[in-house]
Amino acid sequence: MIPDILDLQLSLREQRQPYVLATVTEILGSSSAKPAAKALLDQNGKVLAGWVGGGCAQSMVARAGLDCLETGEPCVIDIDLNDEVFGAGMPCGGAMRVYVEPVLPKPRLWLMGHGRIVESLCEFGYRLGFDVIVDDPQAAGSRFPAAAKLITDDVRYQQLQPGPGDFVVIATHHKGDYDALSQALHSEACYVALISSRKRAKLVLDRLAAEGFSEAKLGTVRAPAGLDLAAKLPEEIALSIISEMVAVRRGGSGLPLSGPSAAA
Image 1 (spheres, rainbow, N blue to C red):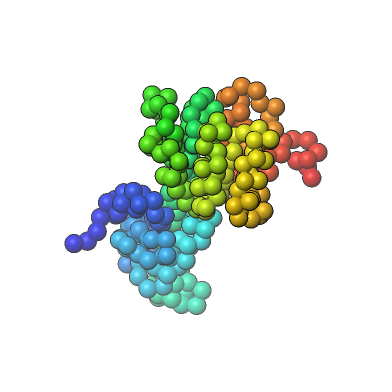
Image 2: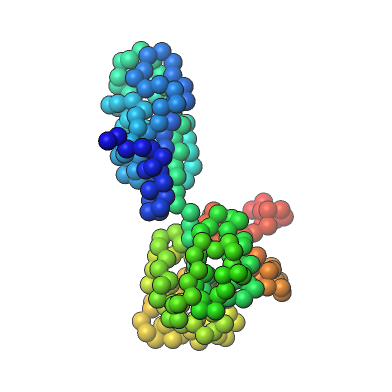
């Protein structure tokens, strides 16, 4: 049975697997593929379903798809089907334009703890496109309506299993700082933050250093968490942390867009 593209897309999303959707948008002259023809490619460039042309045309789409997965940005490619040297190597007498769109799983935001800062982070994270997971024995579902998942049976935070590209914020009111931070540092999370005083953070980091974590690894922990917004209110503290997360995710500097620093 020929696989259905939509079913495959849903399955890949469920598995949090990246993929590429290629769509023929324009045909000039003769081509085996027709406008609106689609193909679904996996993260290795293999066609899982659909058709946008055979031979070298498919290879060109696959190469573009891999580039798009790397940058996270879609592109449009023009394929000359009549140029055997610079085109697709298929003298069909035509040309085609293909829209190549990468589809990446949403980054996950793991929130360890409860309270107003965590509630605000959950809301901000949801609105900014994160899949939010709240892990804390005292987290009430009614306080986290935007969470994709709520974990309340994990006293030692062993269910904290972030993957590459995930974000972790620990706000356990000192009760679970060590357990949660130790678990996070064993992962490939791209962002690990601890909401804590400098004194408390140093105590936790010193303990982890004594247990074998390298200075380089401990240096990745953002403690205190967030950008310097002179935040006072819980919502303001959450805003400073989510702003730092956006800067990490998008490659921003966190500096003002105006003034001498921006000009430099």
